Image (tube, rainbow, N blue to C red; front, side, top):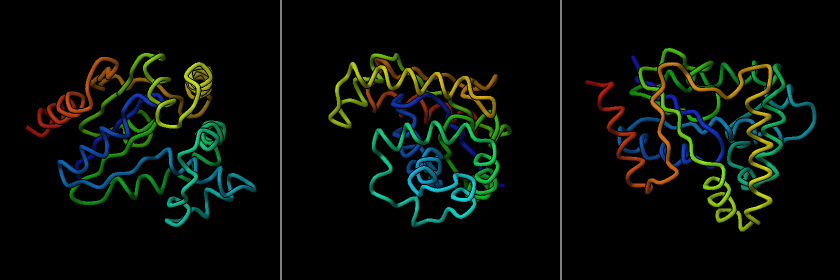
Length: 194
């Protein structure tokens, strides 16, 4: 049975960096589920149809990491038909041996609620805005407003909102180096694996 690590949290909290590091450390597959929603938005047209016809090429688009793609993903993620279409994709991915690390907004609460490890990676709004602004070469003040709007949309959507799973380990990366954050995540997985 594959070992699943579910990682949730708001944008620019460090969850993607931690997810990639955990996948590499344990030899697991990794899926940034946000890319699915970004790719659906980038395809254009009817979002439900775009989600149903998503393929690997769509996930390789170079424009998926832009701020615009992130905002579109947040809006598209609120559409129940899109979420339903992408659910099977995520379940199939999580079932790969020897294990999988999935990161997003609803992995531990909706996609893989029985995952043996659930992490909720977070950081202060100001730290997240600084990180994302540095990554994109954007204005930190504008980035803060955009992140807060996106957080509100992700938390308040009717279908699969961003929330903390009851059994998740909270990892606040506000004052941690990348190395320390990854070390704490590895330790949490090691504890769960026994």
